Image (cartoon, rainbow over all chains, first blue to last red; front, side):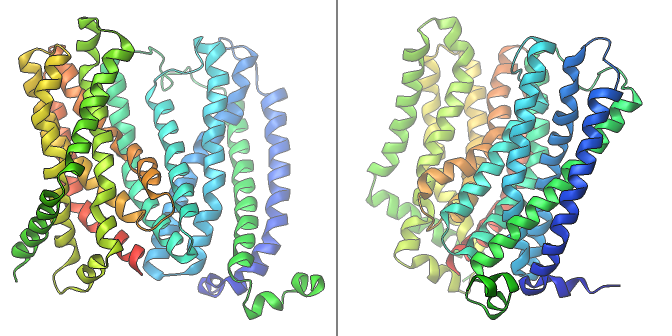
Length: 247
Length: 224
């Protein structure tokens, strides 16, 4: 078994990430092409929703990713706070913008889907509302990290915030859900949607995998940049082939 | 010095500091009054409408008023080095923090609870609904102080921390807002508010157990 702790230092992780980035970009491109093909040409037209439903192939995977990424950030944060590793904080801050992007994408595509289906851009449904709040949590995390100058302190403060956030996300979700049932404003139920054709499910799964690969590729690229930025005056950065050539 | 006396020492000190500079407390209090006054002016004076929005409006005003005081919770002690002495003291920091949070609630939260009936009358709320509203504020405002302390500690010494606190803390306030305002609404609707009260109480217990601890961790990060 490979020693995982070997790669917890930026000097060893940087070249590894450099090798992994093109692999995940290729995976993202291939899976994305397959996923889009399934969603546009293979998946049947929905009997009730017509062609417009096809946006769920972006919408649903984006929502999944926005939630997953927050959990992964919390995982890295826990790791960072317990083992005091530098890399964990870098990974957390590398993931945050992508998470915020997917949360925004999920809200935006949700609005585009909602207009033809429900006749409204926005309904105060429990899922929509908690997705919006998740987006706020991402923005809060990014803002906090940007406001603290010392990167180590920013990492640790961000880690604590994301842990507090991850504890609160289920509480927020259930409170919003209950609030929604009390008010009974929108009579739309996303959970009781008609059973899905298996090709639709496949399309969503492949798209979700493509988004996974994209997230990993982008996060690793961002982490590499953060490493160079923070460790600019260390020995291993000066010995990097790219840096040597430029100098 | 026992743990309890450390708690009361921190509480006493913060209250004493507030008593020496009363305007800060009154500012938050009048902010609450002004915000709740603006709402009818913006929305219109129809009693039916006002009665309907009263719980939510007053709760949102309470959230904002609590935010105002959060900035004061640690900033002055951080600036003059008192906070470092607290971290170094042999007493557990979480106990001192709990004392400071209690002081914040007594100064920023409790006055809102006591002021609520007056504002409630302005919104034409029935008397028994005002009683329920006061009870929700009584359980809910300590919750706001506890959650807010985490945000205040995290943003200590950060640039633009006053605005940042609201960005971090307001999303966390959402469950409190929902159950607090919801209790009054469902009471008015004749559904009973017991469920809301139980959930508010559960949240308060959870926060009381974990928030001082998380705040302590955040303070240590800010001071390292």
